[in-house]
Amino acid sequence: MQKLFVVLSLMIIALGVGQQVQSYDKGQKGNRLIEKILTEIELTDDQKTQLQTLADEANSQSADLDRSEKRANRKAQRAAIMEILTPEQQEQLKALKKNRKGKKDEAL
Image 1 (cartoon, rainbow, N blue to C red):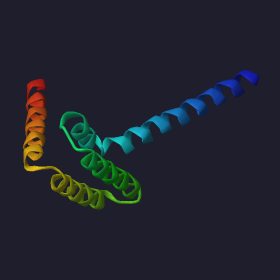
Image 2 (image 1 turned 45 degrees about the vertical axis):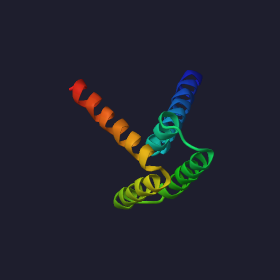
Image 3 (image 1 turned 180 degrees about the horizontal axis):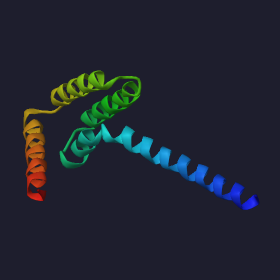
Image 4 (image 1 turned 30 degrees about the vertical axis):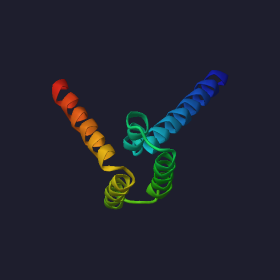
Protein backbone atom coordinates (compact mmCIF):
# COMPACT_ATOMS: atom_id res chain seq x y z
CA MET A 1 0.00 0.00 0.00
CA GLN A 2 2.82 2.37 0.88
CA LYS A 3 4.59 1.60 -2.42
CA LEU A 4 1.41 2.38 -4.31
CA PHE A 5 1.12 5.71 -2.52
CA VAL A 6 4.75 6.58 -3.35
CA VAL A 7 4.31 5.64 -7.01
CA LEU A 8 1.10 7.66 -7.32
CA SER A 9 2.74 10.64 -5.63
CA LEU A 10 5.67 10.53 -8.03
CA MET A 11 3.32 10.33 -11.01
CA ILE A 12 1.37 13.35 -9.81
CA ILE A 13 4.57 15.33 -9.32
CA ALA A 14 5.83 14.33 -12.77
CA LEU A 15 2.57 15.39 -14.38
CA GLY A 16 2.69 18.75 -12.61
CA VAL A 17 6.23 19.44 -13.76
CA GLY A 18 5.32 18.43 -17.32
CA GLN A 19 2.38 20.83 -17.33
CA GLN A 20 4.57 23.69 -16.11
CA VAL A 21 7.16 23.08 -18.82
CA GLN A 22 4.47 22.84 -21.49
CA SER A 23 2.74 26.06 -20.40
CA TYR A 24 6.09 27.90 -20.28
CA ASP A 25 6.89 26.82 -23.84
CA LYS A 26 3.53 28.02 -25.12
CA GLY A 27 3.95 31.40 -23.47
CA GLN A 28 7.41 31.90 -24.90
CA LYS A 29 6.58 30.65 -28.37
CA GLY A 30 4.78 33.81 -29.39
CA ASN A 31 7.78 36.01 -28.73
CA ARG A 32 10.34 34.17 -30.82
CA LEU A 33 10.18 36.89 -33.45
CA ILE A 34 10.90 39.61 -30.91
CA GLU A 35 13.69 37.55 -29.34
CA LYS A 36 15.20 37.03 -32.79
CA ILE A 37 15.04 40.76 -33.49
CA LEU A 38 16.63 41.58 -30.14
CA THR A 39 19.54 39.22 -30.76
CA GLU A 40 20.08 39.52 -34.52
CA ILE A 41 19.40 43.18 -35.33
CA GLU A 42 21.23 46.13 -33.83
CA LEU A 43 18.64 48.20 -31.96
CA THR A 44 18.67 51.38 -29.95
CA ASP A 45 17.86 51.15 -26.26
CA ASP A 46 14.53 52.85 -26.95
CA GLN A 47 13.65 50.24 -29.59
CA LYS A 48 14.58 47.42 -27.23
CA THR A 49 12.32 48.87 -24.56
CA GLN A 50 9.45 49.30 -27.02
CA LEU A 51 9.79 45.73 -28.28
CA GLN A 52 9.96 44.30 -24.78
CA THR A 53 6.84 46.24 -23.80
CA LEU A 54 5.11 44.92 -26.91
CA ALA A 55 6.08 41.34 -26.02
CA ASP A 56 4.88 41.74 -22.44
CA GLU A 57 1.53 43.13 -23.60
CA ALA A 58 1.10 40.30 -26.09
CA ASN A 59 1.81 37.69 -23.42
CA SER A 60 -0.66 39.17 -20.98
CA GLN A 61 -3.42 39.46 -23.60
CA SER A 62 -3.04 36.13 -25.40
CA ALA A 63 -4.03 33.91 -22.48
CA ASP A 64 -7.70 34.92 -22.71
CA LEU A 65 -8.08 34.93 -26.50
CA ASP A 66 -9.43 32.34 -28.88
CA ARG A 67 -7.56 31.23 -32.00
CA SER A 68 -8.87 33.89 -34.39
CA GLU A 69 -8.27 36.65 -31.85
CA LYS A 70 -4.72 35.41 -31.29
CA ARG A 71 -4.13 35.43 -35.05
CA ALA A 72 -5.38 39.03 -35.28
CA ASN A 73 -3.22 39.94 -32.29
CA ARG A 74 -0.10 38.49 -33.94
CA LYS A 75 -0.84 40.41 -37.12
CA ALA A 76 -1.18 43.65 -35.15
CA GLN A 77 2.02 42.84 -33.26
CA ARG A 78 3.95 42.34 -36.51
CA ALA A 79 2.67 45.70 -37.78
CA ALA A 80 3.72 47.37 -34.52
CA ILE A 81 7.17 45.79 -34.79
CA MET A 82 7.61 47.17 -38.30
CA GLU A 83 6.67 50.65 -37.06
CA ILE A 84 9.35 50.46 -34.38
CA LEU A 85 12.10 49.37 -36.79
CA THR A 86 13.89 51.66 -39.21
CA PRO A 87 13.69 50.84 -42.96
CA GLU A 88 17.19 49.30 -42.81
CA GLN A 89 16.23 47.15 -39.83
CA GLN A 90 13.04 46.10 -41.62
CA GLU A 91 15.19 44.87 -44.51
CA GLN A 92 17.40 42.96 -42.07
CA LEU A 93 14.31 41.34 -40.58
CA LYS A 94 13.04 40.35 -44.03
CA ALA A 95 16.43 38.80 -44.77
CA LEU A 96 16.31 36.85 -41.49
CA LYS A 97 12.85 35.53 -42.33
CA LYS A 98 13.95 34.59 -45.86
CA ASN A 99 17.01 32.82 -44.47
CA ARG A 100 14.82 30.91 -42.01
CA LYS A 101 12.49 29.78 -44.80
CA GLY A 102 15.50 28.65 -46.84
CA LYS A 103 16.72 26.50 -43.96
CA LYS A 104 13.28 24.91 -43.65
CA ASP A 105 13.33 24.02 -47.35
CA GLU A 106 16.81 22.50 -47.03
CA ALA A 107 15.62 20.27 -44.18
CA LEU A 108 12.96 18.77 -46.43
